[in-house]
Image 1: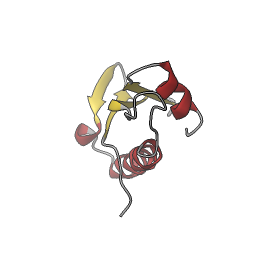
Image 2: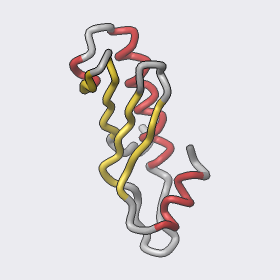
Image 3: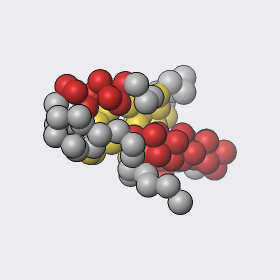
Length: 87
């Protein structure tokens, strides 16, 4: 199996934000878990050309309309540029 970065997923349900593990609808959970796997696999190849590091603390939040928002910690702007080419 390819290398993958862990991605924490949260979902907006009504006015609340909840962890993916707390969502009851298994179809939703399955689809969002797959999205997290895809993002994690893509980000596993991201490396900062200056520092040789990858992203950490990767989070993916889905709002009520299903739009995703990717957040992560990076060592510098160059890593962010490398990531933007992958996702």
